[in-house]
Amino acid sequence: MKKWTRWQDWVAIVVGLYAVLATMWTTHAGASVTLMIIFGGLLVIAGLVNLAMPGMQAMEWAQAVVAALLFISPWIGSYTGASGAAWTSWIAGAIGVIVTAAAIKPSTAEHHHRTVPLH
Figure 1 (cartoon, rainbow, N blue to C red):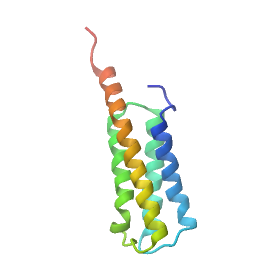
Figure 2: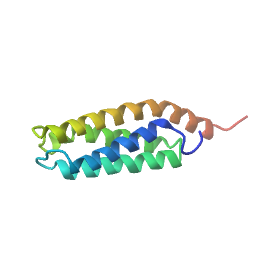
Figure 3: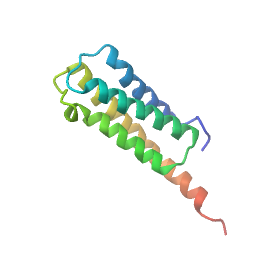
């Protein structure tokens, strides 16, 4: 797998960045700003690491966990009533989980290919 070429990680970066920036124009309640910035920022970081070092299985799973946490953050942070922030978290988190799930199988295959000794 070549560095900086996986579309799934670019999508994760974009949705993470959107979640962070959306705190400037969405209605907030509870811990929405904090959680959107934390989980959105972590999604951006995970996407960048996955682009720079493709085939790292642990980082793929970490990205999936962060995206799932972004999805459930409206319930964690008590902001389901703030529709702008809640919908942003739900949609960005769902997209993050979906694209990361699409990237896990190729990443696993790449990792397996690099770690299995040739006979």
